[in-house]
Every structure is written in C-alpha cells, then in structure tokens.
Length: 215
Ligand SMILES: N[C@@H](CCC(=O)N[C@@H](CS)C(=O)NCC(=O)O)C(=O)O
Image (tube, rainbow, N blue to C red; front, side, top):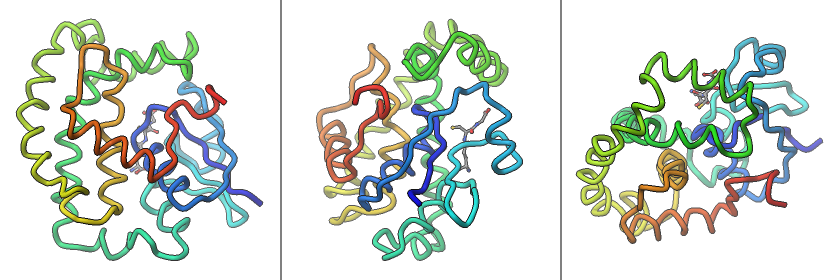
C-alpha cells in the first residue's frame, strides 16, 4: 500500500514531508485537508495537527518522525542530525525566521486554492488570535520584511552551497520548507542567491507547491 499523506499545502511541516517524499522518490497518496476539518485528523491520530502519514502500520504525526520512517536507507541521517547538540539551535533559528514569514504569508495563503470560504474564516480567526488582524499584518509588512532583510546576508554566508555544508541534507529541507511560503507574498522578493538555493532544493526534491491543483 502506498503511504497516504494528509497535509495542508501551505504548512511548512507538511512541505518538509512532501520534499522528503520527492527526494526519496516515494510514491504517495496526497490528501489535502480543508483547514477547518477537525474530525479527520482527530479520528486518525487523536489531535488536529497535520502532517499525518498513514501506512499499513497506522497513522502518525510529527514531521521529523514521519521523515525518519520514510528514510529507510538513512539518506538524510535524521537520527544523527536531530541528536546533535546544535540541533535545538537550528530549530530556534527556523522559529526566528518563521515568525515574520508567517506574518507576511498568512494573509495571502488564505486566498490560494487550498482554502474555501469556511476554511479561510476558520484559519483567519485562529491565527489572528495570536498575530492580530490580518489587515494589520499586511499594513505592517515592512517591519516583518526588515527582520528578514537584515538576516539574509547572514544566511547567504551559510549557503556553501547548501546550509553549512557542501552536500544537500536534512537542514536544507527544513530551511527551504520554512521560508518557501514567502513566494506567495507579492511585495516580497528573495535575494537572487537565496532564490537560486530554493530552486535547487525544489529540483532535488521534485517539489511542486500546488500539488493536486496543477496536474
Ligand atoms: N511538530 C509538528 C508541527 C505541525 C504543525 O504545527 N502543524 C500545524 C500546521 S502548520 C497544524 O496542523 N495546525 C493545526 C491548527 O492550528 O489548527 C510537526 O513537526 O509535524
């Protein structure tokens, strides 16, 4: 049986798993759930959180656990990478980048084809409780962009040509999926070197953002 991935198109943790499936050339069933569907994920794993991978062995959460299960030949060295002392620091870096990325992208994600009227309302209500009204996020774009613009030169130094490495690896999947969402923001442009890095990761992982919508 092919594994089934339940995912949201925009979700960086889901994108990680899709990039991994593509990198490892693993065929899978793709099920894009509406963001307001609480019943399906709760039935599968007991909580409303995606990604979920369903295999003969059952359904599971947690992107890194899913990726480790998929990576039978250990090409991404997930156990070794995630148990390194510096790994929490890398995750904190992703969170630091993720905050402005999400504030910039969320008001646009909701207008992409994965959202219906009801899932858009559900998403906006849930996310604006933490981040404030989406209209204000758009109004304050500049401040979020400034955080990223300040950071890009530091990131550029680490792309050698992959993240702190000459070889493609787990951290590239995690980093690329975390910032990929910025492509949806019309006012935003990646510096050419970061754009080119992301396109390399896309090619290596056979990644299509709007899977299911542009076949
Ligand atoms: N630690 C989890 C995080 C997954 C996660 O945060 N998923 C979000 C989407 S980006 C989610 O399902 N949120 C449900 C909701 O907020 O309703 C993983 O790595 O898989």
